[in-house]
Length: 431
Image 1 (cartoon, rainbow, N blue to C red):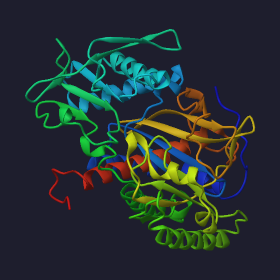
Image 2: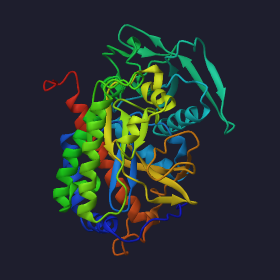
Image 3: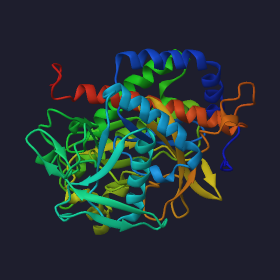
């Protein structure tokens, strides 16, 4: 099932596609060498925007939900990647415990957890789901819209191990982004593998750190391909000490936004792009599409209404926003059934295992699509006939487009790997 894409069939993105296809052996070798030096995150999803003149990741998630949006055809790829990932970390692994988010009533989210359970079960593991939600005091079965059901069990903490009653896992997979901080129950687990590590959670992670690492990756990749790294990299800056509720620090935010808009205008002029530049202001440790706004003009910041201020002030788990990333806005040039769309690429270990289009009929080309009302159309990464097809005119081949998205997704995953190394509390270089 290949979604029908409506996008520009000429311009820089097709030159980029051609360059990527022509350089495929060099690209794959480059990645192979990188993975000899760096450990990929256990699993990753990357939101990508295709503006027709540039293609860039705008968000990288290290606790991806949404596995239920991948097509059944992609399942074998995910299972294979899961086997490779587990084998690398714990070859003798037998039992796996998945720890989900605490919002137990979100059935769409729970369908994603069930899909993860299915993937790891097919990879040859006994998989159970353990909740750290204090409300889950006994085994709880929840019916899902698909007609299936999911069973959550309360976790049991020993001295250095975490498990369930009569279930002792050697590996624990977190599908909980720890926005409110790492609960004590997950700390000091000396005898089990915790994936991803605690410092991948949003209580430690910062988007600015990730995009700093991505910038480094983009520069090196740009050199390999002989392209301007800007074509695959969103410019950004960081602004701290902002208080949206009482308006403190807004003048500093204003000057950051103004400076970045000026830089984007300069780039647009250089490439002859007749679009209106915009920036996205987001919580530096934000998730779930919360704490995000589009700014097209600095004057917009002077007239923020109470609703927008409140939306920007508090994010998931009631965390107050003080630090923001101001990111170059990358408009999306893709449409599915006339609604704006953006590709989301899913990876496990170092492999692309699928993805989908996030589609939102009520949002514009310069707005965040990760919002209520979004729908999902699977990407056909996994179908054999959809392997890259060299020799086909750029922009005319959906599989070539998908290969290009997979390359950008893997660049963001590599940046996440650099980022985790730089923030590892046990590493000597940690500052």
